[in-house]
Length: 115
Length: 114
Image (cartoon, rainbow over all chains, first blue to last red; front, side, top):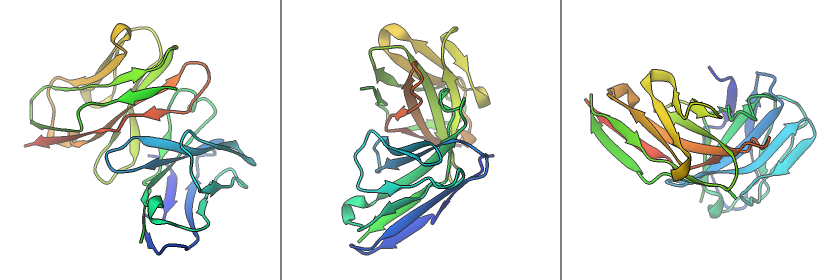
């Protein structure tokens, strides 16, 4: 059973609001990832981190930002939400070996709707 | 850049039918290949993976996948599906050179009719 948690599960918010999507894992994994998925589309990597104070942009450009101050916590922030940000956001983690073997543990996701 | 194509967006089968979900990838180098599954209300989880060796790999719950290098394919199969196999299935790939960033396909929704 994966011990990676995302909150909130659903979020409906107005345009221009600042939001933070939370992601925490209790497995001590160094590597963490944020994926974005629109309905019927691929999961796109938007951010990843190899450890504390490490953050990198993923393959898909995103206006969101991330931080990694603690190993277990990898929040994603949108400074000013827009309807184009409406999507599902999935957080994942892996250990130093699992990552290279493609074994990621996923959270349950946050479905974000921006009105 | 690597990409993954899953041509079947939604597959509906009756219980005991055989299953094959297509997955093709595009990448010029050596790759690792994966199938992930998301059951209703659950997290996305790894179903099976291929790194090297025997191109026919077996995963959990009777699933298997065959890597055909000449066709750039990694199709998922199960001889006899069950209602509990209803889920969304994602094919994924990463390069074999220490790059663990996974590239996913669009997913195939599988519905099994009792």
